[in-house]
Amino acid sequence: MLDNIRLSTDETAVVILDQTKLPGKVEYLRLMTAAQMRHAIMTLQVRGAPAIGIFAAYALYVLAKSIPEDADFRGTLKELKNYLSSTRPTAVNLNYALERMMDAAKNNGGGKERKKILTALGEECRRIQYEDAAVCRSISEYALSLLKDGWGILTYCNAGPIATSRYGTALGGIILGFERGYKFNVYCCETRPLMQGSRLTAFELTEEGVNTTLICDNMASRVMSEGKIQACFVGCDRVAANGDTANKIGTSMVAVLAKHYKIPFYVFCPTSTLDMKCKSGRDIVIETRSEEEVHTGFFKERIAPEDVKIYNPAFDVTPANLITAIVTERGICKAPYEDSLRMINRKKE
Ligand code: MRU
Image (cartoon, rainbow, N blue to C red; front, side):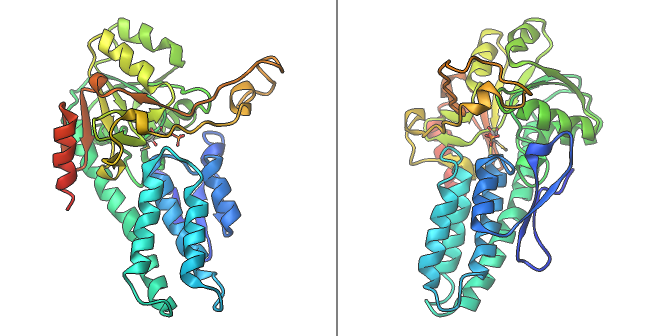
């Protein structure tokens, strides 16, 4: 598994694996300025809901250290937090991690105790990453309990180790099972337009040694109809209180197909991705991204006419009634989700 996010040894930069260069190149970036860090989140150099939270926490720490001695420390910290959190609206973990950092600052020292606050921030960002590794491990154990040796599993987008800290969420059970000798046949949807399935999931799984087959998104129905798939495994960016779930655009299409073919459809996430203030999927803000991703993207030449209109929503919402279970580090939630998610969320306190 590749190291994806870390503090530089001198703590003046956040070092990330540039996910836009995979699978061709394993390249690391050393980010020092707020503009570079914001750019990294917006362009998906770092992506995956838990990973952007971890990254943003480290970024805020590095930036906090460079706030001038004579500046309004808390005011500047808040501005930096807002600057980073306004990058991607759908993933709840971004703001979750940044809020944790702000709380750490608030609970440690008064306005003048800059050193104390910086120590608390440094500890908190490390804790966020460390906790995520444990959370992913627990999700992976629950995920594996849902699988049988020899099964075919369909995945969408990328919810693997590089989208988190270790193991991943949706890929965690598959990787853990593989380590324990299970033989799965994983079908990854390539995930247009940004190809996280082909560039990242196929890369991570083949690197691990898992038997992996890449399909175009529009082949999912065919593969399911051929009896090759026994379970669908996806990650998510935000779960509403009623179980409606936002994940990469196209996920709901897989869920509809899974229902048709009577294949269980599982969603995996840390409890930090639950947004109990969001009543249903209708309240989830869906990020819209640039036209360029659709008409050019990873192609050498434009693949659509100059004057065609393009619509590029980056996420969609899978209605709760299409989801067999939502799997978290604290257990497996089933319908009615209003009750099961509330219970699991309570266990956090
Ligand atoms: O736009 P992306 O690539 O950040 O979208 C990511 C996803 O949709 C993932 O499934 C989600 O963040 C879960 S990552 C564990």
